[in-house]
Every structure is written in structure tokens, then in C-alpha cells.
Length: 94
Image (cartoon, rainbow, N blue to C red; front, top):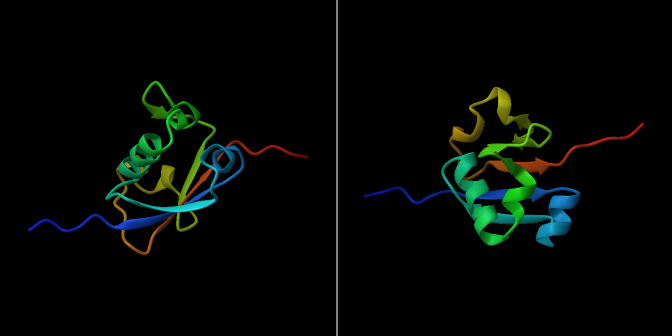
């Protein structure tokens, strides 16, 4: 019997929040890649904001429980039901 996919809380910030018209949602997925795929399926055009040539744009920051995925498994990082994924666009300021 297959384990059900965990529901992950996803927080969106700045232009991602505006595009999806929500700041937070729950999506099912076993990995970061699956959550991003679900977001792209739910919000047509979202893929262009996040991906470039099949990889996450270099200026996009994705965090799981406050830790950047670049240092912890990247898109293949396995997710658990209590995980929180946050997606940040480029941040600038002064």
C-alpha cells in the first residue's frame, strides 16, 4: 500500500503572492519538485516566474522550515507533513 503524499503548507511572497492571489496554500507532494509542479499546474504561467530552462531561476529562494533548499537536497528534498515551504522572489533594497 502506498503512503499518501504529505500536504505541505506553501507560503508565497511578493510577486508570487500577487500572481497566485493567495499568501498561503496547502499542496500535496513528496518532494520540493512535486510541490513546484503542483503550483505550476494550479496557476498557469507560474512556471515562467520560477523556472528557466527546466531549473529554478538562480535568484529564486526556496526554503523548507527556514533552510534554503540549495544546501539541503534541492528539488529532490523529501517533504514531511509538518514541513513548511516558502518561495521568495529576488529581494532588493537599500
